Length: 318
Image (cartoon, rainbow, N blue to C red):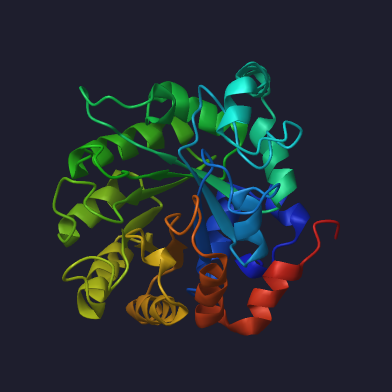
C-alpha cells in the first residue's frame, strides 16, 4: 500500500477504510491532519480553509462545525455570492438558504467537495450530553452518523469543542454507536485534545477503553499543549494505545496552532519521538485555520521538504 503522502488524486477518491488505515500505518508517523472551521469566512478571499490547508501540506482535512442539517462551506458554496461584509450576509440570506437546501438534498455533496479539495476528508462529531444547547446538526447522533456514511466522509472525529460538557463517558458511548453504524466504511478517530471543560484526559485506561470500544485511532493531546503533558506522559499514553493494536494521533488544539514555527516544530518532534501515527493541527489561528505556514512547518518537521513539497504540489489532474 502507498504511503499517505504518495497517494494520487484517484487513490484519494477511491480508497477504502482498510486501505487508508494501512496507508497511515505504512507512513511511519509522517501523516498530517489539519482541522478547519468551515462556518467562518476563510482567511483568504475566494479560497476555502480546507483548500488552503491542503495547499500547505495536509493529508487529512477535518471539517469543524460542519452542520449536517445545514451543509455549507464558506469559500466553496458562497463563491458566486460575492460576500464582503455583514451587510452582504444579511441581504443574501435567502440565497444562502437556497444553497443550503440544495446541498442538503445532494447525496454527492461531500464527494464533490472532496473533488475540489483533493484530500481525504473527515468531520468532527460531538457527543454532547442531554440538556446542553447545541445545534442538532453538529451532534453525534444516529441520523448524523448515517449521513456521514452516506455522504462519503473518510473518517469521523469524535471529540468535544470547548464548553460542550462532553465527558469521557459520552465519547465512549459515541464510539460504540459509531462503530455499530459506520462499520467497515468509515474510520473512527476519538479522544480529547483538551478537557472541553470536563473529565480526566490523563488516564491511559480511558484510552484503552476508547480503542476497545471501536475507535480505530485514539486522539490525545500533543506534548506541550496542556499542563503536565510532557514527552514521557505522551509516550506512555501512546504505548497504551498501541498495545490494543490501534493507532494514535497527537493533537494541537489549544490555540498553539497560532504560535511560532519553532513551537510547532518542537511539538512535532516530541510527538514523533513519542510514537504518534498522525499529527493534528487545529483551527485556532486566524479565521478558522492554523497559520498556513505552521501546517507546512509541522509537515517539514516530521517528513522533510521532499515529501512536503510533493504533497503540496501534486496535481489533481494526474
